[in-house]
Picture 1: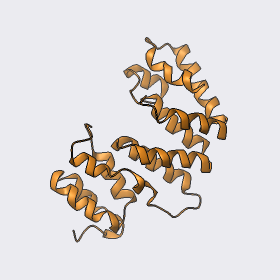
Picture 2: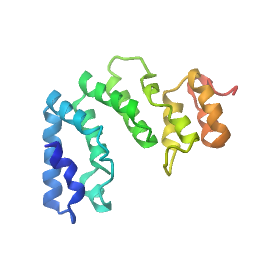
Picture 3: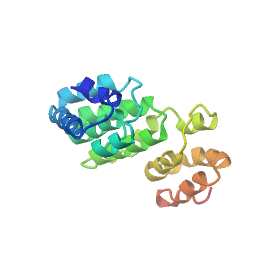
Length: 184
């Protein structure tokens, strides 16, 4: 089922029938619960993050198969799905994926956990951005994650980042919870 979901990016043009079949398969994957999580866990390490062509994203509701798998994990919920999202946070340095996964984990954990620093398991994306190891058009999602889920422990990271990104860093510092970044 996962293979059919990721192969869609190779089919052009996308018809309404194919889009409907794809959505059904994604829904069925999410309905499989833990079995679906296991299948998604196998898929995510692959470098299949390239997006669907423009009308594909509009017809399917997701920009790529990888983003669709994140959505399925969020729908499945539970400890297994959260575990896969956290594993993916440890291996991705893409600011958009970090933001999407952090929000998904936060949504899944709002029913009990108060640990808001789980996203810090990422491989220091600010350092990767600073060293230009990451080629991305927009770093804003990463700063939004730091601002939204960080606390005083992210102040040094944001101070360092403010030297290179003189808007994102200071804005995130100013918006940290409890005004933790204002003195910086």
